[in-house]
Length: 341
Image (tube, rainbow, N blue to C red):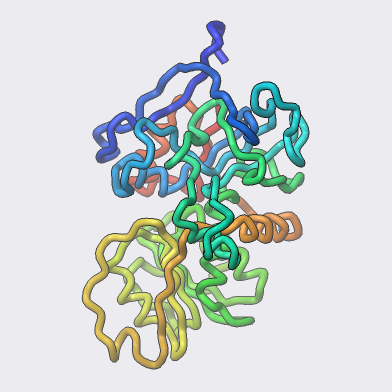
């Protein structure tokens, strides 16, 4: 916080190519939490590819001039003005803020346990200001208690990259001891690979980044290859993390009979024409992944507390958030980029 009481934040000034510098740094008044919300001082915020989609306009604008960032580790400062109730969290406690920020709780999706499909859902860093800032807010019911054994910077990527990887793995129907192919190997995939390895899977990684291939081998992958290569054996499950629709036929062709491909991104370029016999016959299937439920987040964070994951991060100071997104777009980030105010 500056001497004049203002705080630093980055806003999407005008969505466009990252080379056009869509983010603008501002100094503004401390955000005010609404009813049932917490004011949180940001300790670390992961830089997710979804932030890049918001900044570049791949996703429609939900809030003009939004502050991106939905992998937020922070400490509770206070509740809404005039309220002392901080829910299950104490002042000064570390909390996590993830992508899912609000759901209606009443529609047929919410009541059947699929709140990630709620048509009235709101999302951090898209519908409401997120963590590319010194302070932010979160509804208390959507904040997460965090494992104590991780430092702030390591926790941040768990709050989206980790949670979405957890859900994508479930959607991919990986059988016990199965064979898994991961296409793209950034923040989410390097965590998902570790989850699968703990579960006894054989992991094959296909990615265009030579640096990422080295990391995959260091984490225990059985094989690595270029993005469009075939794994050395048919796989039971595959997850596409890269937002590249042209890789969908490659991933489907790599599946064994009855295999499942999960598409883990919120945005994907166009998928080429598929050949039924080559790509889909023999009960191979495609499943998308849409956000996460709070139960997904809670389950994954419990897993992370029990199994210490190696979180590879590249730190950036908050005043270089635009550089972090530029490096992410150019595949110059090893593991996950994390902003540190």
